[in-house]
Each structure stands twice: as C-alpha cells, then as structure tokens.
Length: 224
Ligand SMILES: CSCCC(=O)C(=O)COP(=O)(O)O
Ligand SMILES: [Mg+2]
Image (cartoon, rainbow, N blue to C red; front, side):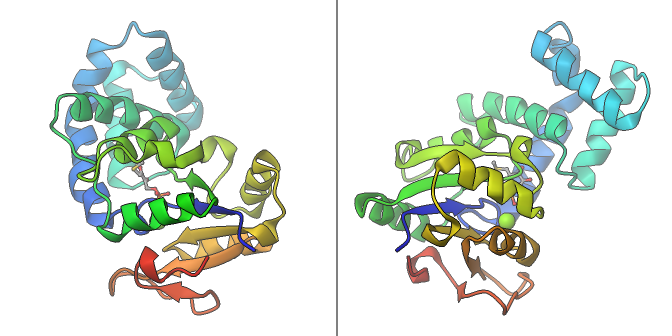
C-alpha cells in the first residue's frame, strides 16, 4: 500500500513551459540587478562563493552574473543558481507579477491523496523556497498545507539513486510504500533503483516515454 507520494514539479504538477518561458526569463532578466542590490546580504555572499567554487576562481559581481545567466540558459541544476532563482521569484510572487502554475488536475489529486491519509512530498531541482512559492501562489489557492516536506538538490541530484535513498531515510518509510512521480525517465530509474514505486507523467508529446515505468496522462490517472 502506498503511504507517501513524492512528486516532481516541472512536467508533473506544473507545465514545462511555465518554468522555461516564465520563471527562467524572470530570473535571468533580474539576476544582475538583484546581485547588485543584495551584494551585502550574507546569504547572497555565501551563494556567490558557491558559484566561485563551481567555476574554480574569483569572480567580480558582473562575472558572476554572466555565469548565472549562462547557467539559466543551459538549464543547469546547480544549488546556488536554484537558491538565487528562488530569491528572485519571491519578489515576483510577492509583487503579484508571478502566479504559480499547476495543471487543473493537480489540486484535486493532491487533496484526494491527502484526504486519504497519504503523506505528500516534493522533490524538485527548484529550491525548497521556490517549491513553497509555486504551490503557495496558485490559481487554486495555497496548496502548501497539503505537503509534509520538501526536498531539493541539497539532498542530491535527481538522477542519482542515492538521493532517493536519503529521501526514504528522511521520511522513514520503505521504498515499496512510496510512489515517485516524474516526467523524466532517468529520475524514475533512479527512484526505482532505490526501491520506490514509480509513475511517469506523460503530459504532452514533448515527454520522452519511459515505457519501463507505469504511465499516466494526468495526476487523476495515477493509481496510488
Ligand atoms: C520550483 S519551480 C522551478 C523548478 C525549477 O527550477 C527546475 O529546474 C525544474 O526542476 P524539476 O526538478 O521540478 O523538473
Ligand atoms: Mg520534471
């Protein structure tokens, strides 16, 4: 019996286009000004040090902005980039310039699973702060009370089985009782290697099918 569901965001609960056509450009066009305005902030300084560590050298603020803009264009899933993106998106959600996209079937499915006593978790490359923002500002209201916890790249990469083993340790359930939802085959393979149940969301014809896993066209079709 499935006791917990761990869900991906992009391509699973929410559209890939929203992330790539709205969220990423929002962060990219504001990154340089955000760094200048917040250069004295301890958290921003620590994240810029992490950027320098990845790039293996000292960077001026403008050089760091160049690197971060490039990482956004390349869709890199690096923790300092994701944390900075989340901080920039926060300004947009708070100003009412951003609304968190979820598919119409997402709130109903999450509410149904929650009401059935299943614990719900998010595992996304977006930072935990960004995850809470997207689910906290949807057209269907604040969905965050439905979730018991959030995981991001600080627990490890989404294509590594070790990350899913760490999540199982954190939520204290055997893999057989945990269902992982994602649109990406490599993530589902890694979750299965850690012992989790899996289901691929195939929302549109851009999704690369992973026929080794059960598939669903929407969360309403997921059997849990
Ligand atoms: C928290 S919404 C933004 C998601 C994001 O930044 C991203 O890179 C998509 O990652 P996912 O693991 O949800 O596919
Ligand atoms: Mg995804």
